Amino acid sequence: MGYKLIAIDIDGTLLNTQGVITPEVQSCLYGLRKHYHVVLATGRHHTTVLPYYQQLELDTPIICCNGSYLYHPETKDYQYKRPIAMEEVAFFIEHTQTLDLIAYVDDRIILKHTHPANYITTLELWAQTLPTSIRPKIERVDDLNAALTQSKHVWTFVTEGDSSDIEALISLPHLQQNFCYEHSWFNRIGFNKIGNSKGNLLSQYLVHKGIHPDEVLAIGDNDNDVSMIDVAGIGVALSNATPKLKARANYLTQGSNNDTGLLEALALLTK
Image (cartoon, rainbow, N blue to C red; front, side, top):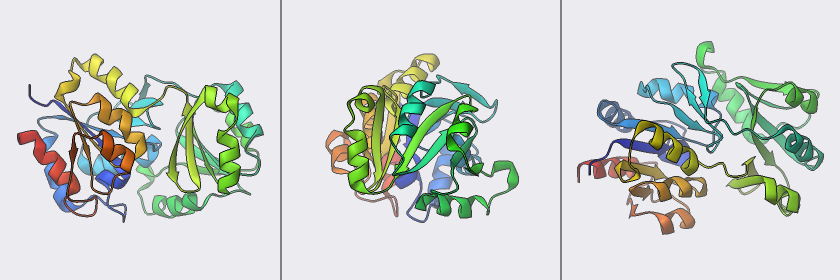
């Protein structure tokens, strides 16, 4: 059975540590997209994926916010949507007063003026370098609660702050029953509706396209890629991957996202 779909994580996999797709990777994927479904699967909001999507000249949908929705840039459609319920939004705001809180909603990212997380500043600077047509919408608001109430979909919450405050948050029984979460940095964690994952959404998309899991090559580097690796016929972890992902992968690359890692993984398509 040959491969039909390649699922690729973005940060730490597609991108090097400078946040760049290398010319070698771009050239390789440009050729592969003519013969395979190349699907980007990420914890990012879709607006922060579009610059890379356009660079690779893809025409497939994107798995966004760790499987909270499937977004198709060509039609601007949101499919397989599983946003956070509004009553859970209220709970989350109530219990994150001591943390910097960022929300991925609808077609934008919002945060309070008074609590700008460190990575948002970097994201804003990057966004300003992009053409307005693909520039992510990042809004600093005075009243986060009001902005969230006016949003149609709340996809993801990202918290950043003191590790003890974060641990206190994730120890709450109600949160554990209604949210799933993944660390993306030592003091940063993303929260989604429970049951959402890259793997679950990938599985739904495969059924829709009539593609068997054995026809999938999935490539990643972090714990939020485990579900995707588990679904795929071949799951690949780059050398810079977490121990958890390496333990679940079928194949480990010698190279990292800074050199030959992704190219090694893609070479498996012809073996």
